[in-house]
Length: 418
Image (cartoon, rainbow, N blue to C red; front, side, top):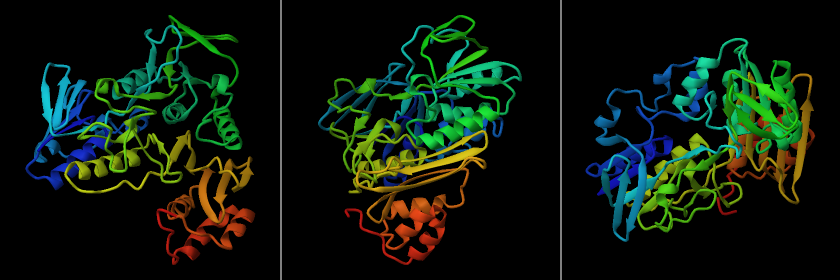
């Protein structure tokens, strides 16, 4: 059996290792589009703040790991997939053609640039690759002016490395009017914005970005900002162009079924590029999370190797550290129709808790500044436990969640289909 895996992020690496375990004699080729060995993108902030060096970002640190696993690793980009009923081929950018019996698409996402002139000018970068990290690190000198366009999750991850470096940081939230809008309730967002501003960050929530000029210089309809570096963090898009013409269904990402199969015979997808099942809602969404990518890769590989392993679904979960203030979001943190919600805010101490319920089950939560109970919160959501009388207790005091988790630990979780 010939397996080709396009994409060497957490999904691709985990899939390759799982395939080797399940099929000791199969031919496994892992294709990575960036130079060097496979690394973890979520380690980039730690490279930037010098907590680790670049070797610390590698997914597998054992020398010759892939050789020992008999995994052929190629630093190439996939240009085109030619699918057949019994397999197919993949064209690479150096002219190589790879035959496959089973193909995994684990190509992740790329930065989605704002539709303005000047995004390709010198001094303008994204915050997505190790190459980006090197360019940013060169400018992290006290007094330098750094402008970040975008205030969502990608921007939040990158901010972790910038706050406290001595640079003069401006964050452009633009017309959204709120930082971290897609992962944070307004009260929590306001708290995190105040935390940043007290640490010298200029958070700009009004005005439209019109263009970038040489300098670089960010031109808005309300002001012009001179900069030493402009970082574009306005979102991401799935890497799927090489699937054109295959018949693969593309929506938010590559659409897969319960077994991580795409609509193309013998082609699977996993990770940030895959539109997989959401544990909380049962809907099919893209969860750009490293734990989700890793599990996607494992499940996809098992099915590629002939197992019949359905994917249970991933829990939407984000953990963000912005200059020392840590937030967690879980599941349906926006709340659900007909459900209830409790919110507790301690502005002075930068503490925030929000719990969301559907009947007597917890379905979503947000915490800021208090990490003591996040394991209990996640456990109650993922096990779908009936809270019983604990529901009302938590509505009156959300900080009793650990006590609820311990007390309910002896109860059987609700089945997946409930």
